[in-house]
Length: 160
Image (cartoon, rainbow, N blue to C red; front, side, top):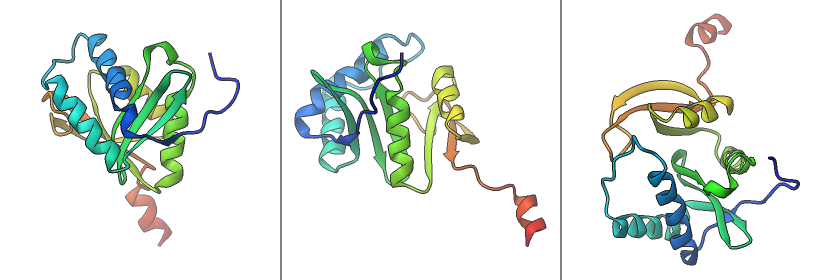
């Protein structure tokens, strides 16, 4: 179900931290392959730090944030949508907003997270590297994805 109007992302404020962290925890609870490696107070502290630094943008809803993206420069650290508002295009809106504000984006996605990998691929991200826990606290196999894809090196030399 798509939204009738395009919601506008806005900068998160410190009072949004508990709701954003609840969205993160809802994902963790519904993801059996994801081990819990941090205390909840650590998640709250990190979310507060990222929010204070201005790295977090939200899509506001009737009762608080419905989705958020955390980005440090060109690196996307997190993108989560509340379980009740998934499949409505909110993640796409946040990603489009990030693309508007940065000419290049990169992120690590856990290899086992097939829906996220498909989402980022559909939005033009390509795989550039794989690592054993290089981009996650859980030490799970992960994939570095970038947007826009680098031009084919052979194509560049042919054009020069």
